[in-house]
Amino acid sequence: MAENLEEIRQRKLEELRDRAESAQTTEATTQTPMTPIQINGQAALAETVDEHDVVLVDFYADWCGPCQMLEPVVETIAADTDATVAKVDIDANQQLAAEYGVQSVPTLVLFADEQPVERLIGMQDESRLRTVIENHT
Image (cartoon, rainbow, N blue to C red; front, top):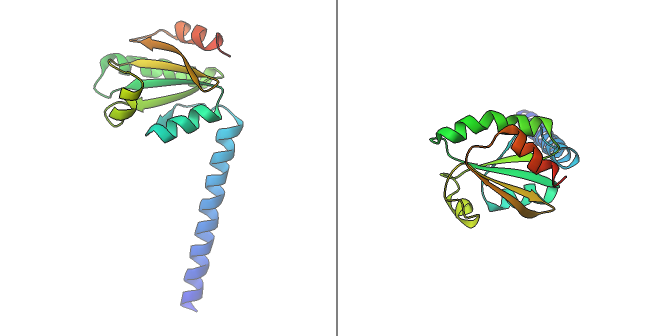
């Protein structure tokens, strides 16, 4: 009987995990996230760009002062615009940063219809980011 209880617990746990994953997938495909998405690798970036019409990717580093100053602006953009905001830590994703030619941080790349259409380097103010996004929505 103890085995049966353990089997039931495992099955229920798996069902709950499947349900939670399904809810996250549905949420990601039906609406723009209100907070930045942390990207880890090319596959995650490609998936994000494929799922959303307009994606602003913030290539940053934790040690970068301008990146830290830009963070609240990027969070506001994620919450207040139709763009999906993604963040890529260049130290953890050096190959991905190299693929996109990131030579200094912060570097922001705007994707529209799965293509990179804008590139902004350095600290940006909120109005500039809003204008760039609005031009592609």
